[in-house]
Length: 94
Image 1 (tube, one colour):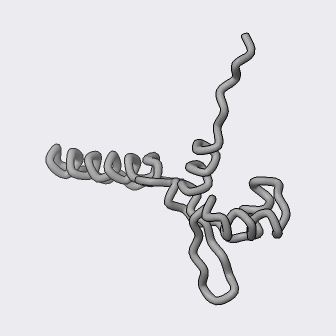
Image 2 (cartoon, rainbow, N blue to C red; image 1 turned 180 degrees about the vertical axis):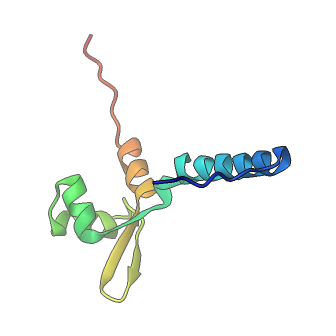
């Protein structure tokens, strides 16, 4: 079995190397804002370990923002994090 050799000029090699680095950086980078991901009501209920009724009460009370498309309800993960931050109570025990 023979292998063919490909000869590149220095300029071609540097351009090729630069493009590979760019691709590698894009593949390795994290999304710009992962918190802007949406979860549906079922995922929210499972994530928070709450009932459908509790989720409904939180929406009715304005504790959590949501989007509704038809009968489907969605929440931004950033809003879920904000809900938890707003109800965070620091430990007072030492």
